[in-house]
Length: 332
Image (cartoon, rainbow, N blue to C red):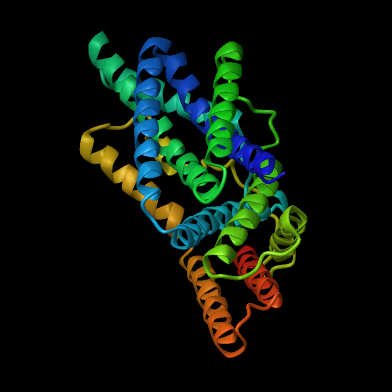
C-alpha cells in the first residue's frame, strides 16, 4: 500500500509540473518549430536525470534516521507551499491556473520578440532550444525534490517510476494534441496531491526524530484528509478572506521570461531563485514547520530519557502542529 501511494503521489506531482512545462514548449513550437524545442527539452531531461542519480547515490551515504528527517523536512517544505497555494486557489482567494491563457501570453510575447529582434534561423533555433531547456529544467527541479522526498527514505523505485510515467504521459498527450491541457482540474489535483505529500513528509519526519508512526497506511490517509481540511479552513475562513477576480496566474515567474535573454548567468539566477522559492516560499510557514519539528523532537527526547519510551501521542502532536502551521499559512 505504501509503495502504491508513493507511486501515485509521484505520478501526480510529476504530471502537474509537466503540464506547466508543456504549455511553454507548445508556445515555443508554435512560434518557431518543434526541432529546437525537442533538443532543448531533451537536454534538460538528461541533466535532471544525472542530477537525480547523483543525489540518490549521495543519499546512500547518509545514516538512515538522518536521511528520513532530511527528506521529510524537504518534502514538507515543498508540499506545504503547494497545499497553501492550491487551497487559496480553490477557495477563490487566489487566481487559479489557466493553461490556455498562459499559452496565449507566452505566444504573444514570443511573437513580439521575434518581430522586434530580427535573427538568423540558427540564432532563433538556439534561443528557442535554450528557452525549452530552461522551462523543463525549472519545473523538473520540483519533481526531483518530490521524488527524493517520497522515495529517498522508502521505495525509491516507486517514486522514480511514478515521476517518469507522469511526465511521459503528459508530454505524449501534449505532443499528440499540439495544444495546452487547459481542461485539466489542476488546482484540485494539486490540492489533494500536496496534502498526500505532506502526510508522507510527516511520516518520514516522525521516523527521523524517533516518533512512533501508528496505524500505518490508514494514518497516512487520515493525515492527508486532516491537512487538506486544515488548509481549506484556513483559506476559506481567514481574516482577510475575499474572492479575487484577477487574470490567470502565471505560476512560475521564470516561464514569463520565455522570450527574454537566456545567457548562462540568467539561467543560473533562475535556477537559484527556483531553489530558494521551493525551500523558502513563505518564510513564516518554513519557520513554523521547522519549529514544530524541533519542539516535537525535543519533547520526544526528554520523554524517552525520563521514561525510556516514545509515547504514541507525540505523533499526534506532530500532525496537529504541522496542520496548524498550514492552516495559519493558508489564512494569511
